[in-house]
Length: 90
Image (cartoon, rainbow, N blue to C red; front, side, top):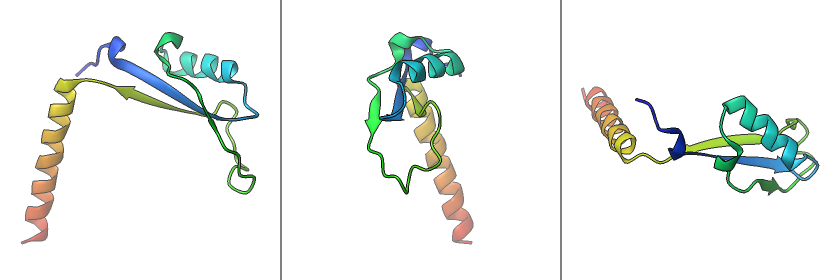
């Protein structure tokens, strides 16, 4: 099932030492999504011990809004949960 491109959004999470414009350029190119579809870049707090292995362009999350896909996903999850419950109770 294809999700229309206008239903897609992306968010970038970076540390303060990463250039937001370069990160946007990089992720837009990598995931082939228009820069207009990115929401505001989030700057993450830096905790030196936790952020030793940083990425050059931060992290990118892709979101989509589709009622049809949401209904299908919930149905698939219910089927899997029922199958799993049946296996456990044998």
